[in-house]
Image (cartoon, rainbow, N blue to C red):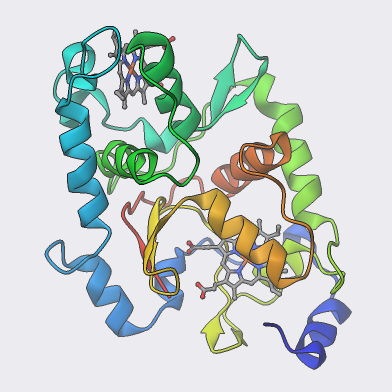
Amino acid sequence: MIRAGLAAALICTSASAADMPAPKSGLEYVSPETRALQADDFANPGMLWVSGGADLWRAATGTSGKSCQSCHGDAKQSMRGVAARYPLYEPKTKRPIDLQVRINQCRTERQGAKGLGFESEELLSLGAYVAHQSRGLPVKPPQDERLTPFIKNGEKLYFQRMGQIDISCAACHNAHAGQRLSGNLIPQAHPTGYPIYRLEWQSAGSLQRRLRGCMSAVRAEPFAYGAAEMVDLELYLMSRAAGLPIETPGVRP
Ligand code: HEC
Ligand code: HEC
């Protein structure tokens, strides 16, 4: 919970894009213990979701009787770099689509299986497995002008004050990155490790779950899972993070 005095101090500083320091992963704002946990594949709890995803990748399901592997082969090759360029433009809906919705699309439309719920174990696992194939590759947002209005909307939301505390994402993450808030350092909000394993959750979780947490912390009504605003925010955050390496599975406090 954010203490009122500190929140007031944060609000007093107006935030602009110019306040943004050189991009740094959230990993640089966590304790040495948490960093060590992420770095060690045998200790990183997020690797449980990655290996669960590997099993699902090979499992035939749905009316097609096919697995992800039946069509895509070895994920190490076919999924390499994919997470680094999502969300991308989906001509069918004329909107950006993020990686988890893309995976679900393949499940329902190509495998003929039931769609997976947001934050379900299976969707997080498949998401972690697919994104893990891009670990170490730089975030590379697509150069696609059809995405421009959605990035702009995400940016608008990022700079807009929200919640009872009446504060924007930027006031914390641009103007006050590196400062301590309720025990943790405020990171720059680069979504490079998702799905992450969060110690506070004792579980893996998606970027949308993380964003909903920030919105609840400032006592704003969080956007629903899958909401257009949510995807626009994800898209804007990925555009800000261009060049930083994908870390999935990240570990955060
Ligand atoms: C009052 C300050 C504050 C506001 C406002 C805020 N956040 Fe955060 N945010 C935090 C803190 C503190 C953390 C790190 C907490 C932790 O990991 O324990 C965080 C974490 C994050 C992360 C995770 C970064 C990583 O390394 O995985 C993202 C992404 C993020 N915030 C985005 C947002 C967005 C988008 C908004 C606006 C909708 C927002 N935040 C509003 C304080 C804030
Ligand atoms: C019946 C064949 C088939 C199955 C089964 C299938 N896919 Fe796909 N998938 C495709 C095709 C074809 C595309 C390309 C579609 C397009 O770009 O319009 C695709 C695209 C994708 C993409 C986007 C790749 C990119 O470069 O943007 C991802 C991610 C993906 N699939 C993941 C999965 C996962 C995870 C599963 C299993 C849950 C799966 N797919 C099952 C055929 C399949």
